[in-house]
Length: 255
Image (spheres, helix red, strand yellow):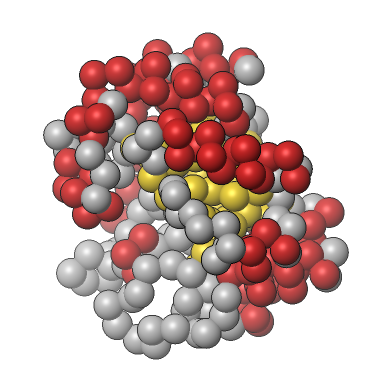
């Protein structure tokens, strides 16, 4: 599967945006998703990256589903600034609105308001799986690109559907994870960022050197996809570059 990650529109940008401004951003987002869906078979919607308020990824996913797009839709769900009541509402919404899965993660610290609910993503996945939600939704947990397997044992023990990595910079990172976790039945979804000048700041912030694979990016993704059968392409600041790359990777969509 080839998935593409996209951020729902902000609702605050120096000021609270008007309904008209948010609707315009949402229309633009939906247009981009329909355009890029020709080249991928999954969309992943993030949840308020960097703690900046955005339209709910679950609401965004439902709007896309209602427009008739037949594509796998997953969403991130932050636990840092939610309690079990609001999380339960969100998980129920995801089921009722036809999403395919949720990535349960801590989330970036918000610039304002409470900083931490003290909930652990692994505990939240266990809670909802014990309630039976695993029959209706895939649950994913995030792991580092080069994990210490002893330190992530709690995540392994709750038996999510699979794991979504942080941004990968070498196929060997993926091979190591696959060798350890895929035989246990976990789905492995490596996150790969599209190299481009517009994404340079994001690479720098993550400490990933795009020069290592910039000139052979399609081969880089293809090699990783052969190992996992599943990749998540992210390009936070350069939609055009992502679209061009995904068009080159469209053959993997069929695998």
